[in-house]
Image (tube, rainbow, N blue to C red; front, top):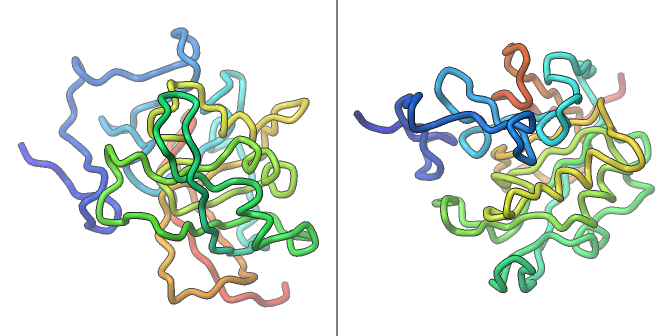
Length: 228
């Protein structure tokens, strides 16, 4: 059996035929540090554009279908550079979007009345993400974002390091600050052409209607800004 190219047909992550014996779900209940549920034999994370709730990292968090998002929300699209940093996991030199990188291009005033921050990463390799240790976000950057907006969207495959030792610290930094942010979402692996300019947009995030999931495939639409 063959594979199916994901992410608009580019040679990135692939979905493989269902193999129940060799491909099990991951869950906090089973002693892991995060939930990964399977939809029709496919692991949503890292495969396609998907939106996730804090249930990805905490077992009593809401399922995606329980989160009520407005049809249109105020969003800010910004393109961000990264910094080379030595990983404290294995000593490799990583490309990381730090808080300093974010603050170079966005400030608190710009995020006033903004519901969703959309980050497009510069210098990413869009021909292949698997086994390349793609760009990811620092914990400090994700904590800052979580303190400013309820919803976060990025064109990277994950806010985490590809090999994060299962710690999921960037997700936890976004979803937790003295309490779990049950209404927040993260959307990963979107495609944002460079011809779309940075600035203010209305955004529509439409998760697939799968019940009882920590993350589901989703569609994202940026709409030229107008007053509601």
